[in-house]
Image (cartoon, rainbow, N blue to C red; front, side):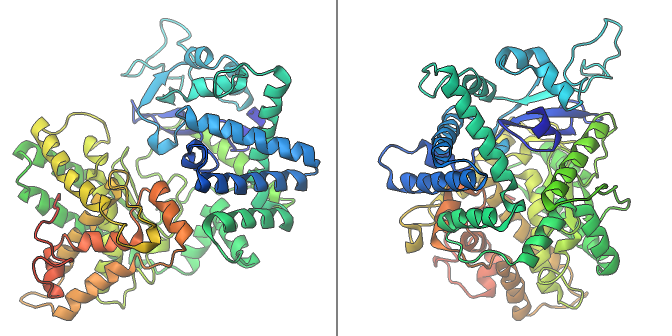
Amino acid sequence: AGVINNADMNFMFNWYVDVDSWNKTRYAFFIRPVGTTISSAVLKANTGSKWAEKHLGYFRDFIIKVSTLAGYDDDVAAADADNVIEIERQLAYNGNKTEEDSGYDQWVDRSYLQLSTPSIDWDKWFARINFTEVGLEAYSPDEELDSFGQPINIPRLIVAQGDFPLTIEDILSCKALNGTQLPLDQCWGRIRSYMRFKLLHYYASYLDPDFEDALHEWHKKRYDTKASKPRWKKCYETTTSLLGWASSYLWVENTFPKERKDAVTDMLNKVREEFRISIARTRWMDKESQRAAQEKLDKMFFEVAYPDEWPESVSGMKGSFAKNVDIVGVNAVARARTRIFERPRRQRWGESYPIVVNAFYSPSVNGLWVPAGIIQKPFYYENYTDARNFGALGTICGHEMTHGFDDTGHLLDSNGDSKDWWDPKTFDEFDARTNCLTQEYSAFGPEDPRYDGKHVDGENTLGENIADEGGMKFAFYAYMRSKPPNGRLSDAEYRLFFTAFAQNWCEVDRKKSMIRALTDDEHSPAKYRVLGVLKNFAPFAKAFNCPIGTKMNPAKQCDLW
């Protein structure tokens, strides 16, 4: 496992270095549960579920295929399939959650890990990945401590709450899902199969065409994809993903218009001002909570287009494609070893690159990133009208900003710390208004025959729905203030704003992908990211002349921010 983790791969748990949850002037070492390869809903479905059996069949075929491609005979490949599914099901049933659902952090030391997972020699594991100081107790009573009681020279060890260490211990100590003690040879046969598959799955897209074809065939069955990506596109996506900083630098220096950085920063400030005004007008917040919310908004920093100082990129690339993938991983681990003893920079880009077509908000540091990759057509262009730029990129910027005040963001103060920074009644009022959105979005879906009667999970998608609603609203009012003094915006310009917003989520989905997203995606389906937001916004109804009581202008509308 140490060798695997040294190449930035993971086996039964994830680890990484990030800003300390207790002391934001330091970095810490985090251990999180690893997710299952296929949906836990498939693994946990009742016996007889045709849907689950079908997807388990697809998964079994894929495991057998990559195992035989790797040179194992049919019996070993079939055993691999059975063993992998058993362990995956055990991880799913024992509450092993993904990083996003893993609950609160726990500050622990190595003795906690050793007690909960004694089958792993944690001292040896930390030594193998060369993080020897992490999670140790103070060497002496005179050891210098930080303000939270952690030794200065010993990085804090943080483990996600939950029973996943016990689940790992069950697997390694030969307990089956039902608690049965397995024979030693059967037990380690399961573990070998699982590790073998994890490695083959990780490398499948980096090996020869047969492995790529096997991966594509599995995805085709799962998601109904029709064609594999052409070679040039695969090479481009892999290179820009694994060598993100080098690729970004080449693109920004040779292609990206630098004046867009200032223009989008100005757009962000205009959107923020509208959010600030909206907070001041909220009737459900007490004055002190309003001031605290505005302070958080004011302290939110923006990183636009690209960093002022470019970080060092990967070095030592040589040899085969798969070997170079390993070198990227080894470099990432080496950077983490150095970073853990450095002082964090709030504005650090982390593993997000300027070339990425997306935008991000980090609740732990209260910062927002808008990479250069999204500051281009069709989201932004200097020759577009303000209606189009604010409707497209402006709503995305507002979306990320609103994440600081969504169902989880509103629990953190201006420094990203979890505390009671609002009046208790204001927290209750927030929950009451988000319940409206939860119920509204949960009603979407059954009217569309493509969803087979299934509906959106309004609770699971709540954070993204709040961000969609706020982002569009604040960008719209920022756009309205962009008009010339004493000027007037035409109905066509208003409609162009809403059309540009809608086009952000214009996509073509296959039925399998649509239904899968209802359970796996924290975002609402694209269709409802448009209709759900606009039906709650009176200026849209006015622009398109929607009478009160119609589908897009209902008498009851949800309103949070």
